[in-house]
Length: 228
Ligand code: ADP
Ligand code: ADP
Image: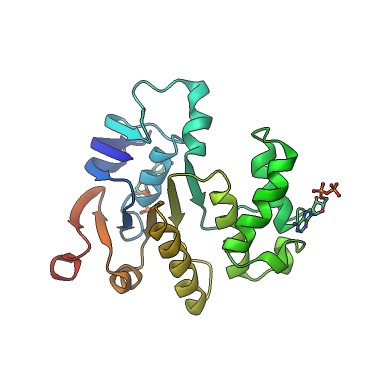
C-alpha cells in the first residue's frame, strides 16, 4: 500500500530531511511513525501526499508509482488516502454535515449518495447529534472527529492521522486512538504520525522510528517493547 525504497529528500537550500528511507506498510496494518521534532515526519507525509517530490528513490502509494504518476492521476491517488490533519482543516462557515458533504461534492458524487453517506460516517465517529454545529461550536475532540469523518467519506484503504493527539486533551486522545483502532479492525490501514513516544508505547502496534531523516527502528506489533 505504501512503499518507500531508498527515499531521499533534500530541500532547496540543502537540508536533507529524509536520508535514504526504506519501508513497506501493508494492507490492514496499524503503524505508528514516531520521531522527534525535525526528524522528518512532515516530509514523509508530504511525500506520501505528493505535495513534495523525492530527490531520489522509489515511492509507491496504493499502486501509484510516483516515478510514473501523471498529474491528472494525483487527485485520484490522494482520494485513496484519508488524512486527518493536526489542525483539522475544517471550513468554519460550514456545519459538520456540510464539511463532510463538501468532500463528496467536489468529486461530483450524486446528492442522493451524499445524503445517505454523510450521516452514516458522522454516526460512525459518534457525532450524529452535532451534524448541524459549526466547527467553532465544537470541542477540539469533536472537530477532530469531523475531520476523521471527512477522511473516511470515500472509504479510503488508508487513513493517515497527523499528530492526532497534538491539539486535544489527553482523555480525548485515548478516544480518538480507540476510534482509529476500530477503523483498523474493520480492515482499513491506519498510519499515525506522532512525536509522542508514550502514545505509541501504549498501543502495542508496529512502530517505525525516524531520527534525523533515517529509520532507526521498525518493530512489529509483538516485538516493539523489546526493541524500542
Ligand atoms: P518533523 O515533521 O519530524 O518535525 P520535518 O519533516 O518538518 O520534520 O523536517 C525535517 C527537516 O527538514 C528539518 O531539519 C526541517 O527544518 C527541514 N525542512 C522541513 N521543511 C522544509 C522546507 N520546506 N524547506 C527547507 N527545509 C525544510
Ligand atoms: P434538502 O433536500 O431539504 O434540500 P439537503 O440535503 O440539501 O436537504 O440539506 C440542506 C441542509 O440541511 C444541508 O446543507 C445541511 O446543512 C443540513 N442537513 C442535511 N442533512 C442533514 C443531516 N442528516 N444532519 C444534519 N444536517 C443535515
